[in-house]
Image 1 (cartoon, helix red, strand yellow):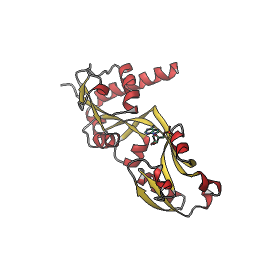
Image 2: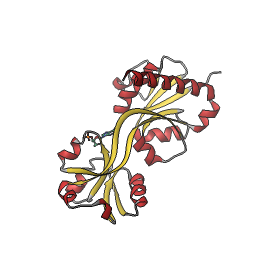
Image 3: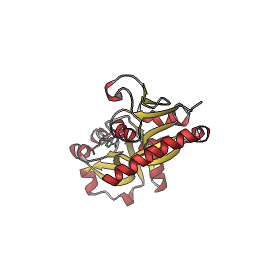
Image 4: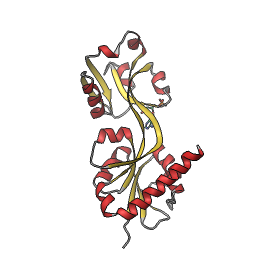
Length: 219
Ligand code: AMP
């Protein structure tokens, strides 16, 4: 009996950039997940299916074996901190996790003098770890979106958020002041599946690695 594999992906930028890579690795969904409301998709390979879920749920599905492989942003992985393998940096959806604050505050602010901060972020654990490592006390306020609004309405002095072009920060009079981490999307794997479905997993991972190397060679 052949082992069936389930690959978990998230809608949006990760899906848009992962589908061409999977296609180059010989894995193509029979229906375009970007144009369907289905959650499970068969592929041209009878033993591989895709599930399309929320980005923040991908590590959970993979950790608990509901998916064997997945593609997840490093930001989500840092926050999840679970038992799974981070196999390959796919170089997809690159951005950076930054501390940002209002431009006016930044003019007379020195990050080296920070001792106590009130931070709004979606990345509570990551932010707590980052500041604790610098000996800075924090009050962290968890938000699910529109972090940029927090300093403008007095909810927090600073935010920890993803920055790509910097346009969102600029539009809200905020500036980057500290770098927390470089972010990109990774191929992740369930640790039991790596042993129990060894052959099928290795063949799939190798195909994705080869496709990635071929892509990088052209770029
Ligand atoms: P930008 O204006 O290009 O700096 O993008 C910043 C906004 O897009 C923020 O609201 C971020 O949360 C979001 N963002 C930027 N890059 C990514 C990414 N790679 N993955 C998810 N969200 C992102």
